[in-house]
Image (cartoon, rainbow, N blue to C red; front, side, top):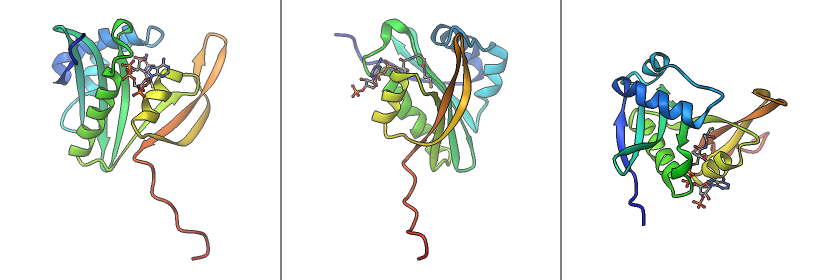
Length: 160
Ligand SMILES: CC(C)(COP(=O)(O)OP(=O)(O)OC[C@H]1O[C@@H](n2cnc3c(N)ncnc32)[C@H](O)[C@@H]1OP(=O)(O)O)[C@@H](O)C(=O)NCCC(=O)NCCS
């Protein structure tokens, strides 16, 4: 049985490792270590790296602005998927954003990304918006869903 991953807080000094993980998980969308260093600058932003057997196996990058948190990117290396690491990273992202003052956490996910949509749905995120044609694909474009955690409070019925 594989031991659960160790979650390690990360920031600008880990930008090169985060860039490698990002490029492995998103081959069509590599980000430079320099831009990643700027994205995870404390105190408003942070990253978490999941270590398995002493090796980086997944990551999440988060930023906060006032009461809003945003998951900028999350990924788990192919060989480490399907064992709960993604869920642990989402939970760490939400907890870290809330510790920094966020009351809600948002993210964008491609409508055709079934694995990520399942992960976020299990973690309690709900759709609050849709951006048609947001992501480019080799054969066209696909919408982004905007998800929020927790589910927004119910509006009172109109006219009351
Ligand atoms: C999305 C991703 C991070 C999931 O990581 P993971 O470690 O495999 O996820 P987990 O094992 O924690 O699974 C979490 C839940 O999602 C579900 N899930 C994960 N992959 C799935 C798949 N391919 N199909 C259906 N459900 C899936 C799991 O069943 C699990 O639900 P459960 O708790 O009921 O069992 C991973 O597939 C990945 O890195 N994909 C490429 C990068 C990406 O798309 N990132 C998200 C961009 S918004």
